[in-house]
Amino acid sequence: MKFKSKFTLRKIIGFIAYACGLWAWACFARQNHSPYRYWLVLLPLLPIIYLCVIFHHQLSEKDELWRKIITESLAFSATASAWTCVSYVFLRGMGAPEFHPEWAFYILVAYYLIGYFFSCRRYFSCRRDK
Amino acid sequence: MKNRLRELRAAKEWSQADLADKLEVSRQTVNAIETEKYDPSLPLAFKVARLFKLPIEGIFELDKD
Image 1 (cartoon, chains in turn brown, purple):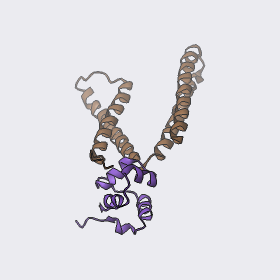
Image 2: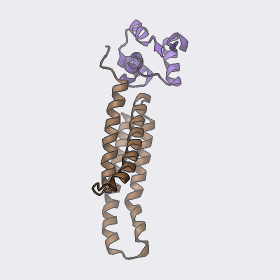
Image 3: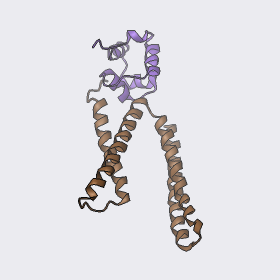
Image 4: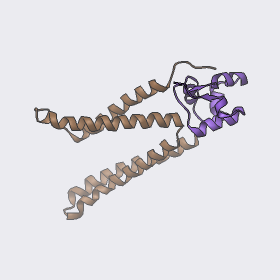
């Protein structure tokens, strides 16, 4: 429980920093015409990197079975998403609708949930002894 | 890999949750090991062996095939 609250607090801080960074980026990028304005993208990007580090620490402190399940789900999600994106290149030539970048996020999440379901089914049984 | 974890736990009259607490893992991990759906890591196997005061090969057995 100690770890859970520690990570929860850090994740909340990370998400607030991300939201603030995104808002500041949107405000400054519009008004600023300097050639260096693209560096402002670091404002939301740095909190994302921080959140990834937190997620990695949280994963490494998990119980070994849960770590395996999450790692397997992430591996499935990454592989399946990569192949889906590569397959789209062929479909694009056949007149498939334009691929929006945000779809990649939804595809990743959808494949993660599919991988999580099958991974849990692989390791868990309904039998529970008292 | 076969194991005698369920039998050893029953002999001590511990629940899966009790054993999970002693091994500092989740109850699901204990259940997955007992049902032979998951093979524990070497450190966890050592922990189990130390807890039951048995050698590792006295608890876990490699499948012959």
